[in-house]
Image (cartoon, rainbow, N blue to C red):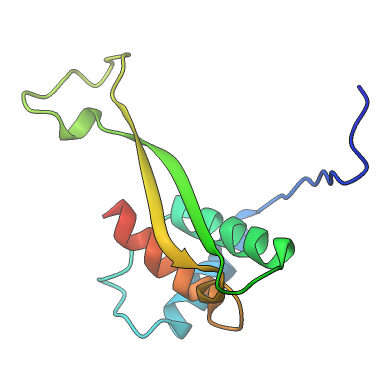
Length: 121
């Protein structure tokens, strides 16, 4: 396979220890209470990823940035579907309306955790 010269591949491994450090950082640096934050592994890992991607891309700090993920809606349907249901209950969730400067600087990771936490809730 021939790869473009302006393409970078990376493998990022987040261990349980890394996730716990990110969780503690979010707890200590956020101005929100712990009850207001959804500090799941999903939120923490994706907040870290999104922050790193924005910083790596560089460019205009006022450029719009967005993030999308798939959410499992099986437990939100009424009437409920069985736990072993395998079907089309996945919905795309988008985080839009944010500029790159929100993700940059020392508050970038915590800002991203708060955005994703609100989105997941």
